[in-house]
Every structure is written in structure tokens, then in C-alpha cells.
Length: 210
Image 1 (cartoon, one colour):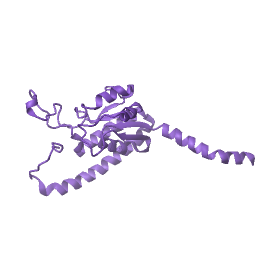
Image 2 (image 1 turned 45 degrees about the vertical axis):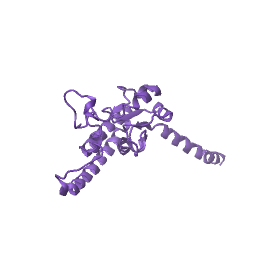
Image 3 (image 1 turned 90 degrees about the horizontal axis):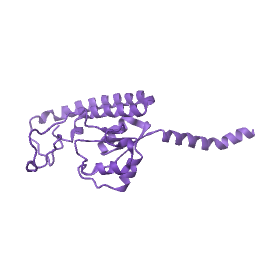
Image 4 (image 1 turned 60 degrees about the vertical axis):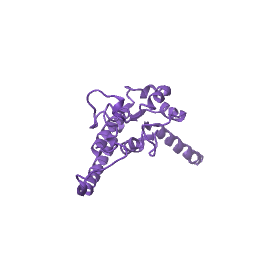
């Protein structure tokens, strides 16, 4: 009877310890934008903890570097970046000052989401300031293309599996589910836009060439 009472008294502590252990086992991920964080969340589910540096309402070209960002990067197992020099004005010093060897450029925890994406508007020939706002590595807003979204998700799933091989099947299942839902959504979007094929569109920034 006394043993049962003691176990009952310890039950909350045991549950708390188990929950804490599970939380500690999560892969800690930081993404530079909300868009990449959203894709990462779709793939990683409850096996990861993920947050974005740039908020959805901010221009990712220009983000004010804050000490709190360094703290986030210090704890990260994986850093997902847009690449193509989109974050070049603010991210490099944050990575360096984090002193986190896992996420330095070229390290296993550094994932450039653009590596397998289809990039448009890659300039050729000599590039000068007279050309205006030109991205020398191509248009960095590639993630707005649903097909690139699938490629990004695949790279993220592979990276998560690299760090958590026991969860590979879980990540691959969530990737497959995400891809299926995105395929269905893309068909709907194409159908809605079909009547506007050939229409001239004006935008304030070249975010939508894809």
C-alpha cells in the first residue's frame, strides 16, 4: 500500500521528467524566414522545435540584427537559409558571433534551401551598379514557386534525417503528405489563374517571376 502511494505521489514527477526528456530530444531548428520555417514545420512535425528570425511582415533583405537572434543561433542544431545572398546584409555576422560550430557555412547543420531549387533571372555578363537592383546569383524569391517548395521540403527532410536517423520514416511520411497536399493545391491555383493567362501584371518588386 505504501509503495502504491509513493508511486502515485511520484507519477507527476515521472511524467514531467519524460516530457522534459522528449523536449530535449527535439531537433532545434532556426530558419531565416517564416516561409522556410513553415515548410520545416510541415516536415518536422513534433520531432523538431523551429522558429524564424525574420518575421512575415519584414523585408528579408533588410533585417535589423539583434542580440536575441544570436542567442537563438547559439542553440540551433540546424539553420535553414534562403541563400542567393538574400540575407547577406545581416546574417553572416550573426552566424559568426553565435560561435556555434554546427551552423557555420559549410557545416552539417547549415542548410542552403536554394541548392536544388530552380533559380530564375540569373544574370550573364558583367554586372555593375548601373544595372540597379540586380541579384548576381539569380532571383532569391524562388521559394514562391510550389515546385521549388517541394524541392526545399525534400532537402529539409534529408537534413533532419541526417541528424535524427531514427526518425527518417516519420520525416519522409510527413514529406509525402506535404507534397500530396501541395500538388492538389497547385492544381486548384492553376485552374483559378487559367483565365488570366497572358495578362500583364505589375508588381512593386520582382518577387513573383516564378
